[in-house]
Image (cartoon, rainbow, N blue to C red; front, top):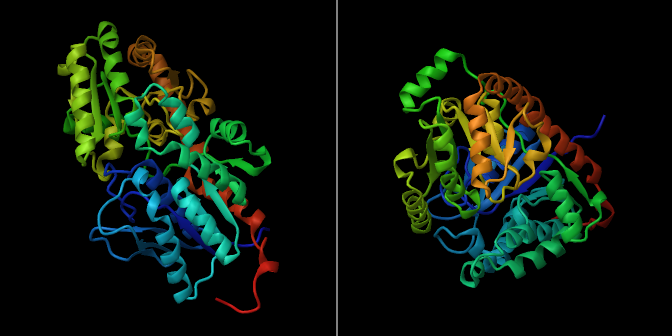
Length: 428
C-alpha cells in the first residue's frame, strides 16, 4: 500500500478563491471549482491541505473549511482585484510573503501542487526553497491560446503578454517534477510545442461532484422548467464572460437552428461583473441583433451556485461552443444531470466521449454544423434518451471527484521524498 502524503500545499492565485466561490466573478470559474473540489477530496482521504491564493479586497486571511482543509490568502499586489493577465509583476512579492508565512508558522509540506502558469512559476520557487517536489497542472497553455487568437489585432494580443508567458511556461515545465494535464490534447501540445518528454506528463481529467450533479425524475424536471422559465426546445449555455467561450459563435448558429427548430431559444448565462465583461456582453448582443435572433435569446447573467443543477436539468440541450476550452467542466456537469450535450471540437473533452452515445460534437466555427448537431438532440426522442442515460453514466463513472483525487495522489506518491537527501541538518 502506498504511503500517505501527509500535507499538501496547493497554489491557485487568480480569481475569488473561497470555500463557496462566487462563480462568474472575474477569473473565477472552472479552475477554481477544480482546485477546491480536488482539495476537498484530498482532505476527505485524510490529507492536510492548504490552498494558497491571493488576498485582496476585504477577504479574510483564512477560511477554515474543515479540520484538514483551509484557504490561506497571502497579500500581494495591493488591495484591488488584478486580472491574471496583469499579475506578472507581483509574483516575486507573493513568493517572498508566502515563504515568510510558511517559515513563521514552521509548516511542513510533502508536495506543492500548482494550478495555471502564474501559480506554477511561484510554486516552483517555493518548492525549490523548501526542497520538496512540485507537481504542476497547467489548465491552459499560452502557445495554444496565442495560436487560437492569431486573427486578433496587435492591440488585443498585447494584454496577454504571450511571449513572456510561453517562455516562463517552457522553463516551468522543465523545472517542475511532473505535469498533470487535463486532456490528451494538452499532453500532445505540451510534448510537441514545449518539447517535453511524454513521460514527464500524466493525463488526469477534471472531476464532478457525483452526488450533486445527477439526473432528476420527470416531475422534478418539469418543476424546474416552470420555475426557471425554460422549455424542452431551449439550448442552455453557461460560463463567465470571455472571448474564448464562443458565445458569439452559437449566436451565429441560431438562425440555422431556427430553420430546423422554429421554437428553439438560446438561454445564455454569461456571468459578467467588470466593465470589460459588460462590454463583451454588449458586443454579443450586437451580434444577435445583426443576425436577427435577438428575440430568441434569454440573457440570464450570473447563475447562483445553488441554481446550477436545475439550470442544467431544465433545457432540451446543453451546448459548449468554445473556440478553445482546456477541458469543458460545464459540459460534464450537464451530462451528469442527464441533459443531452453538444460540445466543441476545440478542446480535450470531445476525445473522451463516444459520439452519438455519450454526447454530440461539432465545430462551433461552422455555424450550420453546430446547429445541425443541436437539432439532432432536439429532433429525435430516441437519440435524446440515449444521450441522457449514457451521458450521465459516463460522466459519473469517469469524472467523479473521489476517483480523480485518488489518481492524483498516486502521482504525488511517485515523487514523495525525492529531495530528502538535500534537506539541511537544521530545520526551517
